[in-house]
Image 1 (cartoon, rainbow, N blue to C red):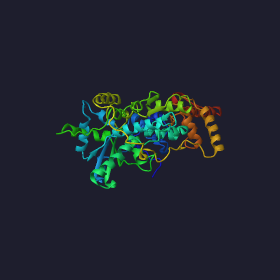
Image 2 (cartoon, helix red, strand yellow; image 1 turned 45 degrees about the horizontal axis):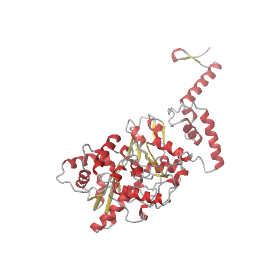
Image 3 (cartoon, rainbow, N blue to C red; image 1 turned 90 degrees about the vertical axis):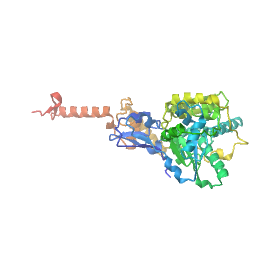
Image 4 (cartoon, rainbow, N blue to C red; image 1 turned 90 degrees about the horizontal axis):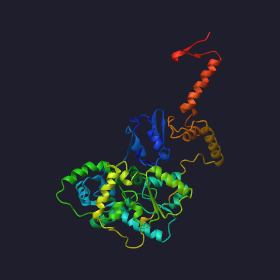
Length: 437
């Protein structure tokens, strides 16, 4: 399996080479070459920023469709709490959950239930002093992958607990097996995802050998079908089983508040996340116990696979929480082994210039020199996100200095001056040239 599989894909036929995407990518994973964008696979963290900003809809996310349910005898829906914020005038979460059963799912297991268990496990581990502070949340897979490729010194700060999605899938399958007596391979669990990063996390997890989730279906894909079912319900089943803590995970700050500790920081939006990680790496953040980071603005409610404005969805969730208890789910004993990572987070040196230290130092020197020849405008006209990125591409042999339009203009002007000086060509009036005699 491709270690760097990513769910974000590019439709070249729709790409106009506008360079919007290259400016927003947090890992400089996109270039525009020969008039078309291209994604550097090993750098992509599937944050979905390019999908968000592409005016031509050339970037899109791969995800599973409802037809994937046909592969299993027993189907479990794993709705993210973000889903509840997509519906206007919703006053009962059970309406959504019953609608999912009407869509063809045999069981609904809320991810917010597992979120409450992860919050409790985090509180226990922090109290025991088993985690390196400040602890960085591992709930957002885009942030975890960002740390993996850009911030190697922070890898051991990431919370080594399974995400609520993974915990929910494991618990739901165990419950379904007890109820039905079916073998685990005939039970399918499907996450209703707000973002492409979760799709990648299902296909190629970093923390486990394989995911317990059998498919990830976009909220935007299921929303219209689910809305129709909800409008025609004859009876609503009492299925809701989480509280304020679990539902709050849908928006930024919800996970942090569940720790019952005021020494935390919550940041959302990939640019803000990078700023926090840089300060943390430089050891300018020392006084905090926990750091919650979400790549999408507003948290999961801001995912590109949602249908509603992030802040509208957040406001709706705040209204829904008024009717809920604080928490409904608790760990019966110690933190179970199944919640802990099977693999530690390891740095992926995808940005390394060379394995040979001497060669890498020389390449860095060349990059500095070449970058100094550029105007420093970071305009993106060359197809790279910055002048330094273009200099790096030149050193790697993937671009030319003349890809910079300012360098190219100077080269043309210099060539014209040379031709003029030798009497072979004199630029004529109105853009036409004339031979000298």
